[in-house]
Length: 336
Image (cartoon, rainbow, N blue to C red; front, side, top):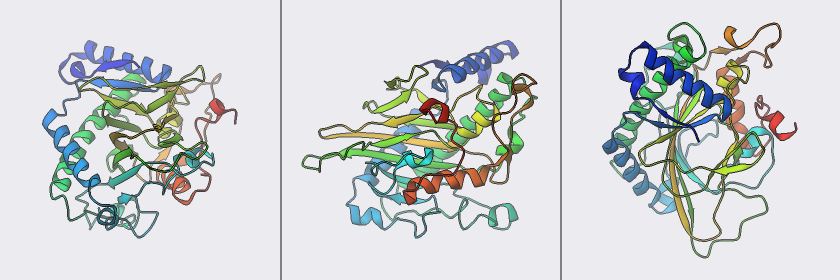
């Protein structure tokens, strides 16, 4: 797992920033995942997020279910274990996954802006906050803002790494359909045996631009390498994991790969927690290969796609347990 220190990006000169961008370029091309140090999200913000989400997931199931959305197209609120199967997002049919999650988006949306009101029923739906624990909302809103700050900085780094004008990606992500998903993987004594092929979270690629992942030290996350083997990943203390999403793979013509990953379940009692910040493009953004990633000998591999349409197609496969019709950027790695 390559490691990138973002510190010189914040404080360094042009040469140091170029060095960080070049290192990220190499890592994104080779693996698609990196460990990120120097992100400047404070330990206190992370600890508050972690404690609040633990307190929520420790509630009895019936109290968590009160925060469920009424509509599967709304990516907000509580999702119980066994209600999704992420492998459907790449067209694979598997048993339901063994995770529970709480999802939130932007908590302060301009209700007078037509851009947001057009998707207020779906991609910019209001958050569904449970009545308890009371610390959940402030803790997640603060962490959300910090993760967004890092994600925006990374898109600026992308511009430099790809030889594009400074802040080239900003107009595509300045009103992103961003989602924060806190996830609890918990196996308790006496639970039913695993079904054949059942995972904590099924193999999938992330759907959007870039994902920033906080994870605890419990093993379970695995990524598929270029040699076709699954490799376990446990982040260093204080590090975040960053991975490329499908839209960036399409933008870069697979110069950077959206890496297949999964979470394997344990056979005995265990608990693993993570929080994924999915930084997507604006819902109306048209994604097509950037000019620095294509030429006469390397034509664009993917058709144009509207970011919001791609996102909804990816989301609905796992929730309806039907193979997604969205572009599968990992098809060649699975013999498709």
